[in-house]
Image (tube, rainbow, N blue to C red; front, side):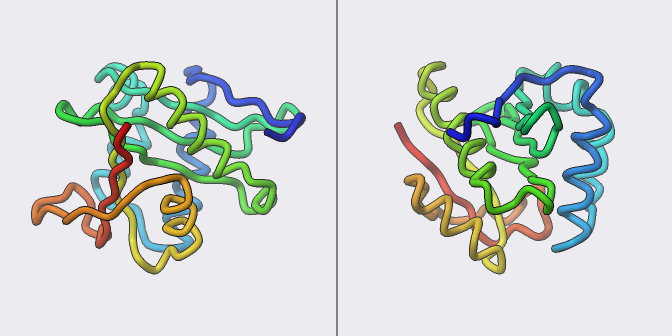
Length: 154
């Protein structure tokens, strides 16, 4: 991992960065769905207090990326991952995914699931390289934009 990169746990004071990084990413590629708005506006309530986790990428003391592991009751979802465009190319996204994989293994989880969209070829390529495999997307997915679902089993 990059020596200037530190991955830290959620702090209430970083809620605005959580929202801003994710909103910027969503608006660039899609739009903010009602489910996104709910979760992004109140990450402590809808992620942390529900047994989930949020991690931030801190690069040279600046919050530049974020990822979450949302407790969906029967599985944990790797979600709400975004990296500030000014810092893309430094493998921060890969570092965040690897951190989550190691975190899940340490927690002795069976797997991690994620939802994405096939147009995000760079992200899909990263997930495949990290060992995620495609599985069917259920019809009532909580994301309108999801057209691919992937799992990493341990």
